Amino acid sequence: MKLLIDDANVTWIKKLLKYYPIDGVTTNPTILSRTGRPPYEALKEIRSLLGDERELHIQVLSSDAEGMVKEAKKIISEIPGNTFIKIPCVPEGFAAMQLLKEEGIHTTGTTVFTPMQALLAAKSGASYVAPYVNRIDLLGFDGVLVAKQIHQILTVYGYPCRVLAASFKNTQQMQELALAGIASITSPPDLIEEYVNNPVIYTSIQSFEDNFARVYGEGLDMTKFD
Ligand code: G3P
Image 1 (cartoon, rainbow, N blue to C red):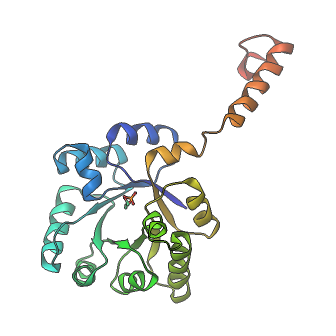
Image 2 (image 1 turned 90 degrees about the vertical axis):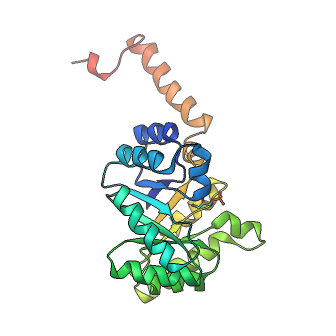
């Protein structure tokens, strides 16, 4: 499963890249605005941190297909590499996805709330579809179930389109999708840290160190022995 960071804060991105096997970064207009930086300045720094291979997903703001395509080309020219253009899954968006597919520009269908919306994006040539798990939960439905249903539909028909699940509020939502074989998730930075934020991990490690030190001496590790 690919694990992406759903944030544009470079301090967070640097920290997470240092420790974790991160596959990329997703942004949206809200996430970019939170940086308070000029959009391309922030995105260029993120691209340079990620290198050319990791994925960077950047969303358009236009409401018509022609404008979306224009924005997509501008984004790709400014931020080359493994960059995906996030296109909202609305009628103009599906038209834009089909046009961008012809141009060889990779798209991610975003703001997905239903399986049939995702199916339209897949048929329009999107590389990914992004169901908003927690926002679906907030509507009183089951976001994890919707993401699983989308995964099933894409798999059954063999579309070359994968789920990139987004909008999470806890690690349980992500774990359920990992169990279901979802291709990718994008997580808020603090939730990635939650994967290993459990005192029992650290007390276990401490007990190994204490037991070893009691017998062999303080401050020693396996390089100190023949
Ligand atoms: O990538 C989409 C995602 O950022 C939406 O998440 O937390 O605003 O529902 P959220």
